[in-house]
Image (tube, rainbow, N blue to C red; front, side):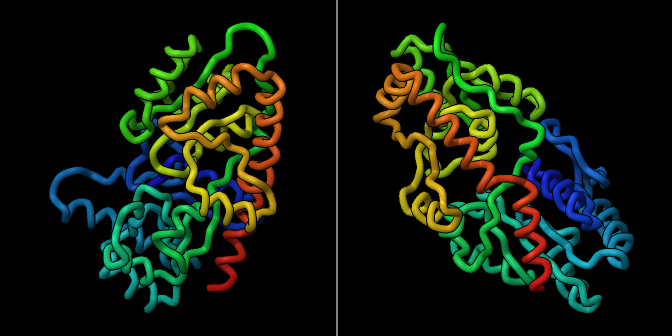
Length: 302
């Protein structure tokens, strides 16, 4: 599964490092149609799907050294996947992206230890798998030129609502209405439509519930936009210690969102300084090429 385009971004960055990396997916998704090979996994009886999956494994096994699995999914059922890989002397990685592990018990996540390594995308997600390596999601910064927030005219707020309930979208709408701010709610669009809308924004509101940020906030910071969101303090502290840079997101809660937006809207200097800090942060923490180096280090230890 090319969840949020993470797999495709990693494959592209690994290739730039000289690694023969390929992304194979069961099916592509409307928002992220990228893949080197789409298995077009059929609906219907399980045996039809598994026939496609086993053919793919037979094709990939001879030429593959490391199988990097995303979202807790394996190419064939787990009870068969790992004995086959062990017999063939192939290595494996489970790469969890957040929603696949959040809120689950240690017993529910014990299957992760079947792989030779585990990866999570943040120190917030590490709460569920403490032994995992942390590799933040990367983006291709060369494809994004910063567009600083405006210092005059009507300010525009951008917010992505993949799930309005999980993101706290109704609270964002209410806060913008209260303050008389224009709000662009980005939902049900292809990923390549998100960037131009972020470029036109002056402030970006991420999420108010989960306690950490995702790719939408990362891209917003890459565009040099100040980002507002709810963060868990411990994860922010661990991230700053690990990467040597403070998380620049303006921290807020459901109750303080309007106040945070009012403060940013009133200060041109604060918007621009926060936006510049965001770009510096993603260059340090979310550069896809730097994250590829971390992946290669993990592969080399297997």
